[in-house]
Length: 483
Ligand SMILES: Nc1ncnc2c1ncn2[C@@H]1O[C@H](COP(=O)(O)OP(=O)(O)OP(=O)(O)O)[C@@H](O)[C@H]1O
Image (tube, rainbow, N blue to C red):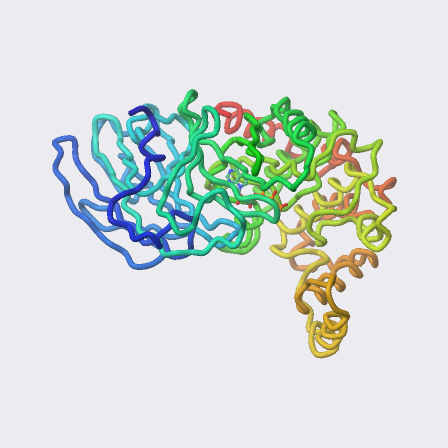
């Protein structure tokens, strides 16, 4: 058995058929630690969204509180006073996914790597599942034992929810039933590239009846040529009669918006927001140079967990080539639509252009990072009785209007705010952030022709005032990481 293979073996250790390997809110997990002499030191069980690591003391693993394993007692929560162990050897993280689940990952930060299921990982992170072992070379071994509470998956899936964890082969890839997330069109599963011995994410999309397979494969194959540190790689594409499979670079840090909302302050400091914007602009420039637009700011993933994260632009389900020549039809989340996109909602033949839309949504991302809120989509005391009766009226108009009342009202208000273009800049937050505010104002310009481009945004004062530091951090943290 090679490398990470064990992660993909079906779990047969007494789980009832109703248990499922999913990133679910109630992960009950425990770690068993073993020293090189094979002695098991202790077991701790937990009952909720936490993990304990022993042997010498119990450590609580909860969202936002990673377990830091290493030699240095000043930084590590689990200390191994062993010369072969790095000062900070690895971190074990529990992060919340956008679907409300918990994802557990192990990030290597050492000089000699971490062995997960007999396979060494270096300077990267891997998703940890039930039965996986994490070994510090020539030192201690941790075994992860997880129990899952059944979480029904409402999305159509290649995997049968009534079965325990299982795997399926698609070409050289082994897809596990471990669901990393679900979107409106796809479920994304943890998979193993059996040739390259690496974990990947497999996006599974149910094909529409009578759909043109050649066209679908061609579109997805186009994305395989994209190669940039800030773009989530597409490794391979495959299909059968029912599903399209897109093999993606695995991101283990969750998505940016979940990162912001689960942050202790519910917003990021200026330096971190700037560093993320810098990466986002680099990735978008790469796409726009190739006439590709992203149009999905909710799909910004974190390569691995932790502060000042490396981001990755993902989900090119909406990305299309020739972004400037072609007008596009509305799809995606209303909150991130530019005014021209909102107008196109009511007048389908209008369409709108992709690249200026990316610039608009970059403005929203910057606003969200610095304030922890959305400039147009927020709760309002007015969303009350008056709105509710409007929602009921709309709902009573019958089939075709499938939104819930609440989301209908909220969407309508959001659309109106986008069209009005009034942005409230809270003085307390924005007064020390003048350059950031200027950039947001240049990006959230209603007229797409007058809106700043990604090239202009990259040359803005906010970015340029720290360009050297940003470039250095980018080189040090990103180019040294395996892609
Ligand atoms: N490369 C990846 N690595 C890890 N997790 C991923 C990856 N890609 C997607 N996911 C997870 O899967 C979820 C659903 O993926 P995605 O948003 O691409 O689906 P979709 O149906 O195309 O989306 P949408 O609803 O935006 O159209 C994401 O929110 C994320 O949690």
